[in-house]
Image 1 (cartoon, helix red, strand yellow):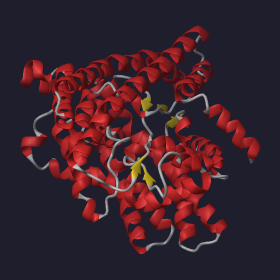
Image 2: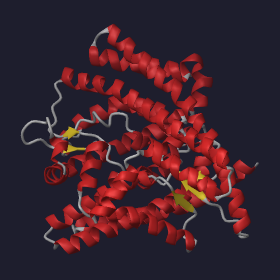
Image 3: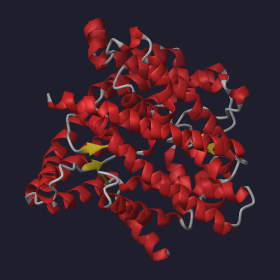
Image 4: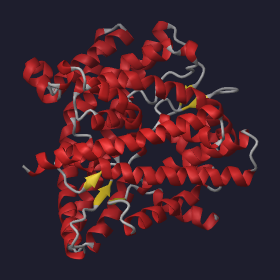
Length: 465
């Protein structure tokens, strides 16, 4: 077990910006790309991931102090510390049996590909830690419910396996949407953050019944046409940054600085995203040609990648910035309902923006409404998991609690797929409400698959026209 853990940790220690391009280089060679072309494509992909991570970190680093300043100014005090995903990842990897999720994901993917149950080849293995975190939370919930260690561990891997299967199926469902958004065929996003589209779907279907919302495509292009210069990415970032900065700091210099920082990020995100197309298009073409030569049934193979491949969608960033003040307001308003966390580390909530982008097809009005409806789920689930996260950190990763004072409470405000994670942890630990919610969630997932199947027929017609 220790040898496997060391090997996996070493491989994944390269980080997504090195690990994923390496996998893509190997995949390129496997489908008969010229070594030089495969190398350049993989290198460009590494540059794209690095650039997107730099920009996301820059934007979060600029916005987070403003959110903290706003909280200080208003006297808001909530008890749980938002550590973000790094602390949760450390807790997940510290679980002694967590490393088994790595081969579990690979085996499930191979079996489903061979049996034609999926067309997604998930090369985003760096994000396997999401399976680990789910397994750890299930194991904790089951143990707390009085189950034996063996039963708790078995159920933890059952939950992780189910999560892997859902990821591959949802990757199949998103592929045409991802191609429409990015212009890159043959790629998809099987990331667990997109699972929250299951929760969003009923609300999206209700919004479809409102002609004023459904009959107009309120995307970033529409904003530019209606607002002129004020609809440009940089200008929107500038204005929103200035307003947030002035409310948080009450000082012109700091407000203007935050405005320029937000404008910079909004302007550069689409530029960096073009590198994904430059990197992935030749690999996608090579995979498509290889599949046609190997199979005569017209089967497509989708390469499953992390969310940054859709980061060129302006609507995604408009939504994340617009939601920031509402996240803070909702955090305070939900305190009587059990919320204990202010979203600092997760203040730029990509986890809600990506599924909203997919399920609403880039309609900003729908995305904003869905974001407002879904944000409380993130906050309340994060708060409910705070005791578990804190105890797990104390047990497996005490470094995550360093410099947090005595008796800290930690959580992750933008816990990916909070609806699924809460349902699976509470359902498998046999809590009656958890079982009901898990069943409802799985029914909703089947509904989402059927909905996307119908939508994809139309999207493919549009892409082929």
